[in-house]
Length: 330
Ligand code: SF4
Image (tube, helix red, strand yellow):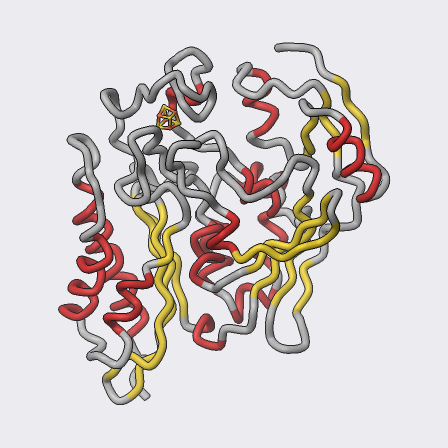
């Protein structure tokens, strides 16, 4: 491990200025991924600015029915917050299905959105990897890519986005609040995560020294009836092969409102807008759910070892939506 400087920031402005001044500077929150990657020489900061003392850990119900999650709120605290579990169950479930209890107690929500991909070639610090060393190639494309993405890929990178919570937040049109050298801004979550394209080293729309301060979830009444379904190789402490965040409102047998996002299959949390459009106003049946999911997945570009994900994603979406129709008729 390379030596680096460490400072503990007492306020947001100091933290931002400290990182901004050093091109190799980075923020440190829970450290559950970042410290591993520093140890493995995948990340090479020359300064870590510890932000754990900053007052950014509150989870607040907003008067309009929305939610404001401080960037330093821990995953387990957010999952347990009554306003989250009751009004946004897909968010609570996505958090409880991520990582392990110990990690959930440490990992922050801002860090969760900033966690790096699980591609083993990225993490071994030696294989060709355009994300770690731009221009070096992608070892996963001709290599072992069973867990990699089928949507939003490029010929430079096919790594699947790793966060579960981000998938639920994408379904809810969350906004990432930041503060940086140029002031404050709100970034719609769809714009916050970047597709790899020709520059897979850029994963998020954050500038150097820009700090996530909160995640805001707007009021989404349909989210009271929502679910996060995760399919993985083992029952705990494992990343998704496929996941689905779904919310559904059915009236007179027809879909009155629907939210759908996919995880584990795409290079960013994948809002399934094509599927949503095809479902809206139509029958709330398994056949319609399957057709809508297939419509969304028509854009998939599977490779030899991950082609199973296309059918698995279709079936998982059908199952999630069907779970929400049980007793839903109004
Ligand atoms: Fe690197 Fe992306 Fe290729 Fe993995 S899939 S080796 S992260 S470029």
